[in-house]
Amino acid sequence: MLNFQEFFTVCVGKWKIERTYHYLLAGQVEKSYTEYDVSTLEIAQKQQILSISALNGIKVDLARVDANSSLPGFAIAFNTRSETGETLSMSLQALFVPDTCVTSDTVIQEIPPPTAAAVDSTAETIRGFYLRDEGYSEAGAIAGRFTYQPTRQTLEMTTYYKRSVAVDQMRIVTPDLRLRTIITYQRPANIEEPPSIIDLVGFGVERKQPA
Image: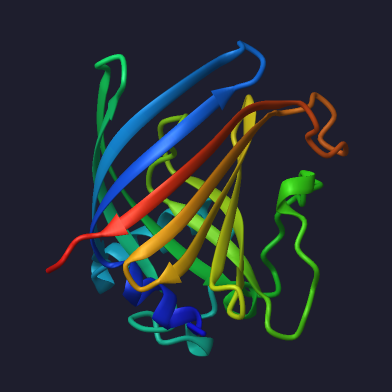
């Protein structure tokens, strides 16, 4: 069983990924191949993400954490090629801040999560904010929510974009094998309603390459 910090340590390295995407509303299926290069965030990178997030209302109590070790995260650079020949290259930085490290005056409007992101509250479940300097489907810094379940070695990230809601689950099966699922919903006009219309479902097998 990997604890919170160990999960991110295992994620560092080079990964080769094969995914299948099902576009349910369009009735299409697409396969892709991706190479990921994941590295640990430096202190300055973490501080930059925290500064951006503070402007959006998410404030961290640094007295409760060691910003170098207790707030895990990673820098990601990847190249994707679809079966149709389309390519995409991108890099971003992500930081994971447990709710226990957030100040009491942080006020974020909680939107009901979709069914796929519903996780039972247990003593072991870690919840918090998933902060990035870039979003996947929309440009600019963005904040989402995450849960981590040590027993299942599963990290789940939910991001509310302007037009969609993405639920991204990453599960470590062995130190060099991850399973990935991605579900994207249409974002409802009423923010009090949980997303229910699924646009995309993706499945992936991710293999870590020898150092």
